[in-house]
Length: 78
Image (cartoon, rainbow, N blue to C red):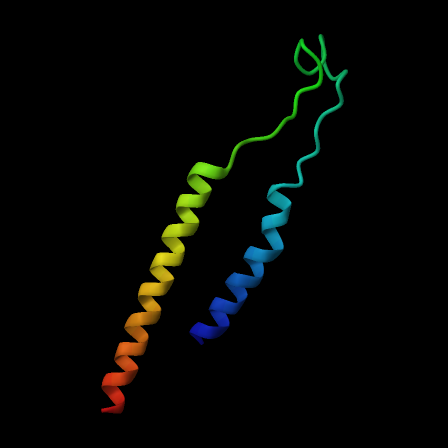
C-alpha cells in the first residue's frame, strides 16, 4: 500500500513541477510605463531557497524511513 502511495505522490510531483516554471514573461509594453523603466526585465519568482530546503528535507526523511524499514525487515528475518 505504501508503495502505491509513494508512486502516486512521485507521479503527481513530476507532473506538477514543470508547471511551476511555466510562467510566461509579460510583454514589454504592459501597463503604464511598461514592465520596468529601463526596458523589458525578466519576470519570475525565485524558488531556490525554500524549495531546495523542502526537497532536501523530504529526501532525508524518505532515506531515514527506508533505512528503518530495512532494519525492521532484517530483524524479522532473524
